[in-house]
Image (cartoon, rainbow, N blue to C red; front, side, top):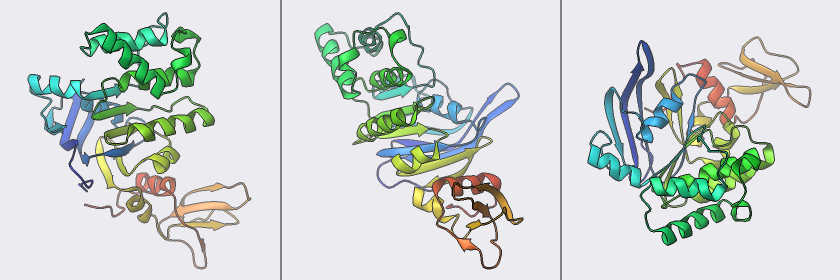
Length: 292
């Protein structure tokens, strides 16, 4: 496990979780602190199960989990964590008959904000923070997909949480919406810990100061984007055709093939690797040396 500098808001140590005979997590370990930690992995890797644990929805079968210095297995400490936690699941469960204001206000009530005036001030604050103050009176069913995702982020920001857990926040968004959401997440990460699950390696490269890669319920990598990219150094090259030595290759817009593999052929035109290159190599070759 490669610790992230600074006090750890999240400590996951050899955590396992099974559902019947299905092992969702088989020993995940990492730490995270202030900033954005990106959680990458293929479908079925266990990302959503892990995020539900970080949101205190599920508990581990084995291993150690500490959130904001507290143990979520203890009922009193779990309540304290939830008071300092913001969670955006993949499907927020909107009541589509609610307006944006009514939905966020409903979540604020669930978060024990009992003073009506103070609660409404807080609802207006988070809606303004995500740029929805002008449509707060619109019903959710009338909002675009990008606006609905922003409503989800607004409810997660209620109470100025110390830990934000975001499950695929940019899924289904067009490029412009994703760029706007990146800006929101970047601002939200100032002074707090954000755990972000995504399939978009470009989002990770743009936003994250730390990356965790999981596969089949296990941690393959935990470190910085630069450390992940370094694992692919000297293993990405361009050629006029797909190289037989490549693990993966695809034709680029220039007509050349971008090849990634273990050993480039003699005289290969090496190019700097990206986060995506390193991620694909890591998934294709679990023997890659990664930080311990």
